[in-house]
Image 1 (cartoon, helix red, strand yellow):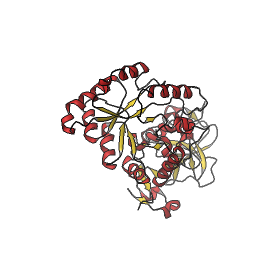
Image 2 (image 1 turned 45 degrees about the horizontal axis):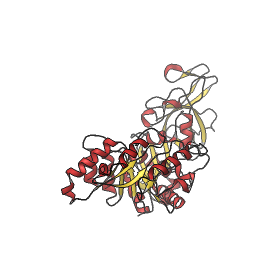
Image 3 (image 1 turned 135 degrees about the vertical axis):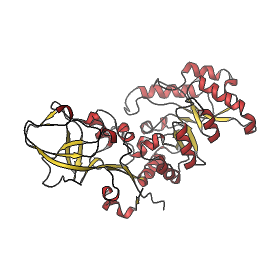
Image 4 (image 1 turned 30 degrees about the vertical axis):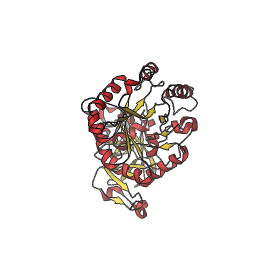
Length: 393
């Protein structure tokens, strides 16, 4: 895939460079700058990078090397396949697997790659301990490293307080295991005034006291903006690295990194009373000019962005002007109302912006009844990925 040098960023037209229905343009240099800004914000705590789900859909093969060059030495992934890819891209980094031992040969894969699984159940601890004992001779008696996930109120993954106390009451349960991290996850970090944040902080402090001298991590993208009490030894931003802003109250010191554009395929007129799209859910109340755009739910445009007679949906930008989606979002196509745009603004062969300046990931998510995280990670593979130069040569 082509990489445009910095001096042509403003002149670049992705559809002229790549023959595709759409393009996801990723500013690698801005991702590096975002990581550095977050690292500066939380110092002296260390700043990791969450690169699971193919770096939130933006391409781990491009993103991980950029972050490594920026100074990031700790990465979080989720699955064994992601661990394989991350280890090749960052041979000397500390890598954690957030989903733990998910079955099959996951434990053996993590041990072979020197990836630290995040153990979230006593069964995980037992499986890792058993592997450590069975393979001890291969490592000359060296223990296997792992992280430990404590549940402090999210009630998803994580050891309960009771399980933590059971684990620490018998040192043999951690035989052959070196704990490199104890972590938890905040439930309401995007709502800074929610008392649950303080409740979880207190629970985390209480339970991690049972693991003296083990590094601790509580905050992800939004949690790190709650201030130093939440930073501990390591923060682990993901969404914020890619320009996401889940919290309106305390926005992170980051800038957008992603622009998504799609081709305009056709422009046509419909008369009063005519319908647009599947199931005829939208009917023209005036003579309407519509543009059909080569993007649909197969490309990551949520079906929830559809519009009907009784409610509005999402929007796109064409030459900087808002064009609301009308009718149903289908697999490959959306239709937008361009009646009020300047004459000639919408033309076949032109482009519409789905995410970019003036239309943030969060705005796109809100209009579709979802969140920016989902918008970002669901960007489909049919859109070409175009990477802007990260200044690394």
